[in-house]
Length: 223
Image 1 (cartoon, one colour):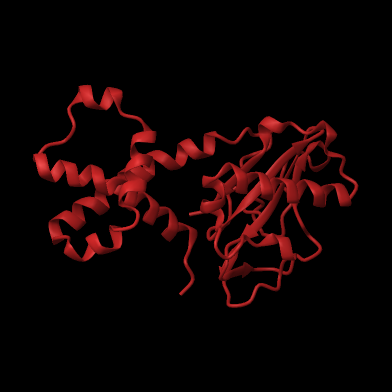
Image 2 (cartoon, helix red, strand yellow):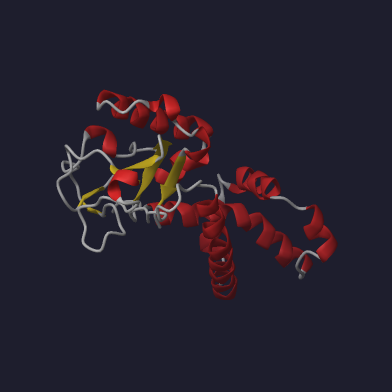
């Protein structure tokens, strides 16, 4: 069964919050407001490192009320985190923020007042339509500040459907087997690799990246 970006995202958050919920169980209470004032996301990431190797063993030992409470708590956290992630991407006005394909994502750069986004699918998924010669979609002055797209409605740039074979897109339009979109987004090195690949491809198509707005470099993952 394909491991979707949604599943990866939920698994990471499950692990990172496990230690917090375990602590709540031990003391029968949530952190007081003073504790929250000094806590950071880095604290949660440290907890992730501590429990990442044993979370799979913890799940079967969980009781029904604890599992149900954990699922509810995680969903609340996801609802808070996802909008924040989107704000990290600097959008070219008045172009709308394009929704990334579920089970994939978008690699985006802004050059000379035009935004270019390259749809990509995770391993185990392929594009709904053939786009081997259609590396990217664009929004800017020459498009009337609306996105080019193969899909009706003009909002989504691509769709990634379950598939055992990846044949509809260019070879570089798929995230690595061991590095789906959310994994790529989690590490500066992997983000840089995908951005550099895209910039090189744009250069090969005659798009000069010397006037690129580096602050607008962005990778957006679908859920």
